[in-house]
Structures are given as structure tokens and as C-alpha cells.
Length: 85
Image (cartoon, rainbow, N blue to C red):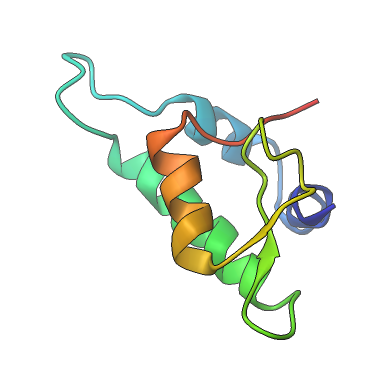
């Protein structure tokens, strides 16, 4: 649900590309583009919630699990990003 609202508020589809473009070419870390995308998503999600928790868009959580912002960021960064589709 949050992902759909986030997509509707973004111009174009470049935000999806950055969420798939996670790793540097030598796999030594994350691209700044990806980290910026996670932070943008986090900022948007904060505007859509009361009480400090929101739905996690990580593919395995499928927007069914409510987590703290730090937990959501950890899932998106360490667990291979947002699940689309």
C-alpha cells in the first residue's frame, strides 16, 4: 500500500531502477542512488503513519508487517530491497 502511494507521488519510473541498482560494481557496498531511494521512501512513509510504525515493503513482509522506521530501512537495505509486483 505505501509503495503504491510512493510510486504515485514520484515522477517517472527512475525510482524503481535505483531500488534494483543496489550494489557497487565490485559488490563492495551500496550505491548512493540506492541509499537515496531508501531514504526517500522512508521520508514518504513517515508522512503516511501515526504511532511510529509503518508497513514494511520488503518482498517477504509484503506490506503486512508493521515495523519501526529503522527496522524497515534494515530490511530494505540488507534484505535486497523493495518487492515490486
